Length: 519
Ligand code: DHB
Image (cartoon, rainbow, N blue to C red; front, side, top):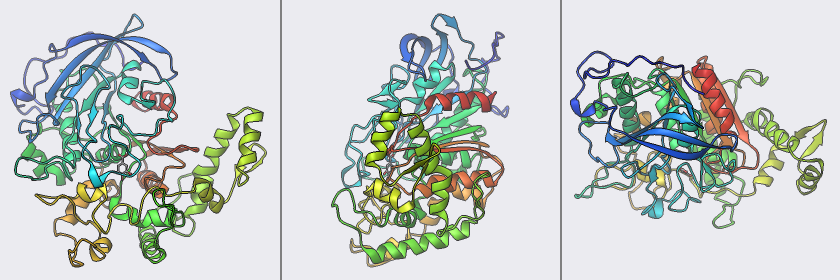
């Protein structure tokens, strides 16, 4: 259980930030302002524990919120677990975002840990396909590990971290659907990352007031939340956010984090259309059952090939692969992730269950307790792509990501040259707007890792993906892993066999990983 006992009272009464500068009084964390709660929470093994904790209700993490209800956070500090006293004063701090679909999330009404509300209503045409409104925090595919702090079958990482003895901070964030009274979209890019950074700065500025070790902040998130978590990890202390953070009134402190947990990150958006066609281009769509336009697919695939070559990434150590290109990426994914994931899944079945599975999955050869199959066999097994074409920058501006790059009174915009050129909404084949290139840098962890080689990035990465997740290309997470490792970072990336979007099959391993890397 996290943290060493620290009994001395930290100096917590002043109002200095972590750099010794002055901290606005409204951002001073009042550590006496909590309610003590006791809840039964399942730990990572599914065992119910009685957890007594201090719950600090929503408070703003910026001095000039454009939206007070979203730019606030809650803090939960464990005091007793199954009657045993927990000393969390130097425990890791888990920053658990509940972002989904790049939509707003709020803790304004939260009365306990793990109650962040994700606002999926009114997503309209921008609904990431497959995500019903009212999706629980973290995603929609309920086939995660049962019992573990789960909401509707989903793993609730905030609860899970609390029952592990960690301090849990849950931030609300602005999201793409928000408009003010004049119809201006104020929650689109880069609002989500500005808000997460402001939350980190708030934690740091309140060192000694918020319990826990501010140098051991671990971020978690799933899907758009996984993308945001990865971006937070990659972009620590980057100057490019400074004007946005200043405008919001974020504390003057470092926003770097120690470790990053990212489940199925929907990131590298401006390259994801090409990657998607490379990965799933031959499959029929879930919605229409039809295959997509072959020539568009080919054009996008060739963009991916160029991009991947330019990245100049090598397979993870031990993979035996050198430079990964569009030509060997299928072999790399099979060897490094897909076959080992299927092997692990099959090995855990009883002999008769395995026989049944293999009898209906003839694409798998099972020899010497190892699963082997071809890329074509794997694709036929996945069977359908979830998204239309292009998957992220839709020609008709209907994708959620088009809204994420909205600005002012314009709800949705193109963010790739290709889709701007092929626009079907009457924009006349224009280029992307002039502010888009900078927005893409603000939103893409790959920019901070590969172009900036950001020294203040997180150095520990936990990245997970369902092997049947067609919300984005598998290469997006795999590239993120290679990019971090290319800088010398500690990377733990694996796939969950036969699992779809927003699944978490090994929450217990994640909690152990947090203990190990922060220890
Ligand atoms: C999410 C899913 C998507 O398919 C997408 O494009 C963006 C976000 C999500 O689940 O958060």
